Image 1 (spheres, rainbow, N blue to C red):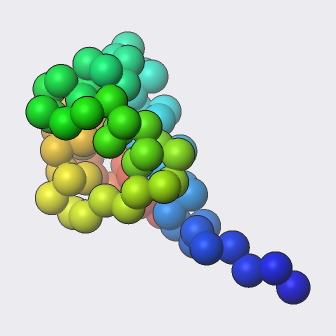
Image 2: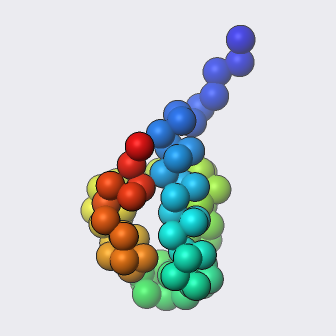
Length: 73
């Protein structure tokens, strides 16, 4: 049996991050500029290549105007 390196919770989180960004009408470049990061940083998070901690999640939640629990299962 093949084991995924990403948990279902992590997949849910990144899907919600993408969904929230689209709902507020922002491109990855705009998010990166506001967070003072690179577009690559945002892309890697949304593709699951980079994990985020709670402080980073709070920044995304604030920017996307969503409560933290929106991103958690």
